[in-house]
Image 1 (cartoon, rainbow, N blue to C red):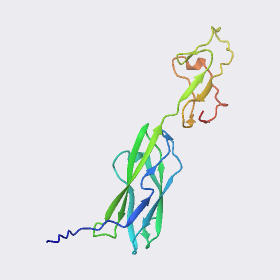
Image 2 (image 1 turned 180 degrees about the vertical axis):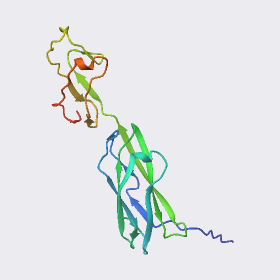
Image 3 (image 1 turned 90 degrees about the horizontal axis):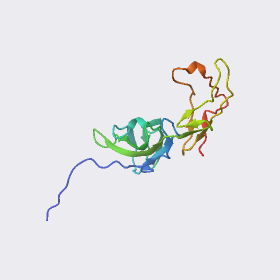
Image 4 (image 1 turned 45 degrees about the vertical axis):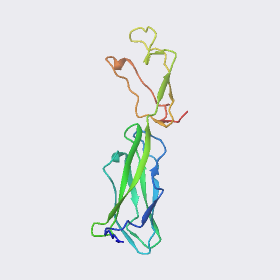
Length: 191
């Protein structure tokens, strides 16, 4: 009988809770409240965390490290860092945080924490009896006379908040139309 011994770096004794950071669906280009990730030292010696950085896989630009108090984790203690999800596109968005534990060998050991979220577009709907095919039609109007106001109702038919920046007119005769959106909130709630 032969005994085979393979030498190599031992796995780092740190663990993540949760094992994947899964974010609630978020509006595209909207940042949510950060989620907290707990890193636990399961060993009886201090672990030295030299870096917590975003890896280059998936959609790393959609996730931001907001805070990090992980450097030394004493035996059987933990530290934490916070990650924010701000999707740059719709659909499933993924990335990974790379946590390097320098306590193991000259190069240390890097453990990856999966990040997962879904980007969703807000859906604006416009309502007015004179809208047809996304065009607001006015009745015939005399030159240099003002028409009655046309009120347009902006609603959110999506599942994430609708953020309104500005409302403007475009086209060849923009000076013929005066837009007042002062009673339109910047955020239209879901529903």
